[in-house]
Length: 402
Ligand code: PLP
Image 1 (cartoon, rainbow, N blue to C red):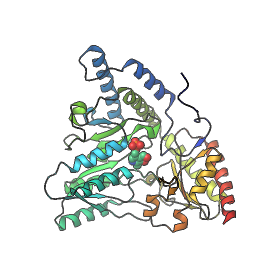
Image 2: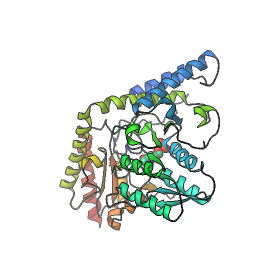
Image 3: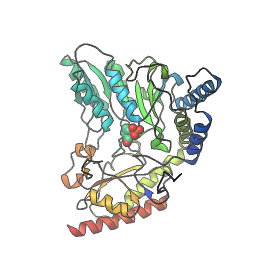
Image 4: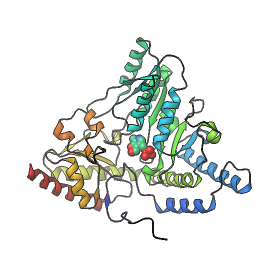
């Protein structure tokens, strides 16, 4: 049979689009292949191979739970972070009956959050209230507090607050522990989209205090096709797919091979995170990248660079090069085998400027030239250096046309 994979580009490019997805590590691929051969039976079957698949699934669940400080019964496996988010928001809000309630979120969320909230609003179940943020895109807990109080004052009870943990476009971290405290004081359910946080920064659900939390492993060298929804013991939600699997929270035969491989990715990320020097080295690499970009490109704008390290992910650099359109920059970088991103591709094949950067209120030339450079724990300094030189040369070329 012909090879169904026509090309192998993985060793060809410098991947600075790691917030979109990352390359699965060899251990992950190995676990996935092994599990596809060895544990293909249905974990709900009563026969012995089915029961072995069940035991494997539960071991993986325990690993994932340990990785984020949860209990195994608080872990629900889904197909993606998107599914986890939609389940948490739609299932969490639909538990309430009667008059519509408010759902508090921000304009900086991933589309999965915004679209889940909008679907609830369209069906008359909820009203979206956007919590303000500062110029860097930080959402301080006081703003959430004020917003909940304002909703209460106009007799609009709040069904849920959903604020992301780490921004996928800018890498800005939100004070989710404090936001969770505010929500608990008001007796409001708190969901956090932790897709860009988990695996890059230590995540302990006990310390965070969220009621529900979503992520997927393909953002930190795990497989695609598996996501995690953490549901704190006692938290209520209506399942989107009712049925018997996953303690009645998500029907459908569990994808055991992907879950096993995802648990391996969690274990590997956990080992990496346990050595604090790794994070410090990555922060230094991000700062080095920003300093080099700044030294080679005049008038470059580095989003959120004034924030302290504790308020930023180590892997995300979002820069604007006024005079060099983001779309043209990406095409030129792609020709040099460098993957980066900007905003979202729209149906015409061109790029819509990033909704998140737009929400930061930047001038048009900054918005239209913003690109996101996101690396992983495997990216080398040499790759960063080569990419910076390429970006600088593309910027000079594009600016020469203006
Ligand atoms: N949330 C954030 C912040 C993301 O960055 C992404 C993916 O880019 C998602 C959710 C969706 O993740 P998934 O691809 O696993 O559905």
